[in-house]
Image 1: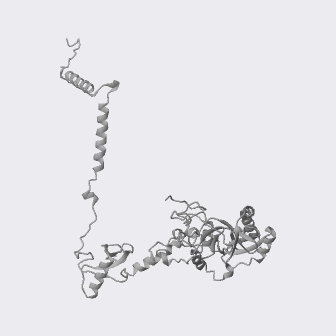
Image 2 (image 1 turned 90 degrees about the vertical axis):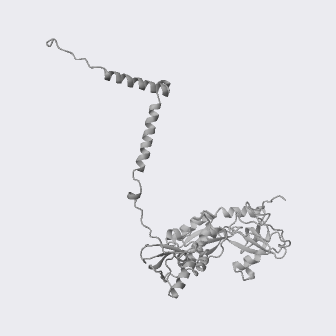
Length: 406
């Protein structure tokens, strides 16, 4: 059986159960191959620009698959979106979205026609210019808000303005000015910094796409307590994400650290041995190791033991017993003296290698002779020169006398 690439998306895992495609917050449909999955419910998940999703009834029983572009009911007019999920899993997605009212679930009209797509592309082409102009209008009105994104409806009759504001903003005058300027129905939606990062998207410091732009739908508050539990340094630059808020991934492993800390000995308990008392100065929760020091303020006579060994010593201290040391075998710890480099190490070891290099270089120069002479000829010439020098040195010197002496 040949592997089939999912149609309707660029990166699929099977024929229709898309994992991650060109749409954000996609859900892997692991019930796709179950017979009759799409017949059990007429609910369909449709996604629009960025992270906005909607749920609709397929009242006309249109045969839909993931990636189909459909025209859905809107107020007023219609909107254009992409089908991202069908079947039984849509019911679970509705529960996550907290859609309790049946009025929130509208109808799917039809598969988008070429005329619908022309209006859709025309409306989308105006979004960026509208956002820039609306920012200037809000600035002229003196409103403390930031318009982060603008989304036009598929038929161009409505525009949604997503804005961020720290305080409550009275934008009634802004809506009037925007309606007169763009001649569309205006809807204002306030979002947080995390929602804005999810809509824009990007790459996190881990090298992967932002969680808020790929799979996260509900944002849980993140506090610095999650960083303290995991012994992470409270550096705002490292703890902050692309949205300038604390990273959502700080909460991912916080529960595991809380569970692991229950087996860790308390910092206030002092371990007593026959040689001295030991204070907890460092703990590694993942490896299950704790480090003790004989001084509460400095790292002196440091010893690292496991959680079980620490609890065993605590039980011994409760019964009035003291082990010889903190080690597992109970033997006293050997005294570790700092190494004396001047006494133990040879400080002239670097000079030896330098002398070897110098001798090798001089030997290579002697071996190289001009005009292609070989080594034997060079050695013979050197020997002849030495013999001639020796003969001249052995000959007696002649003394010259002056005529007056004769």
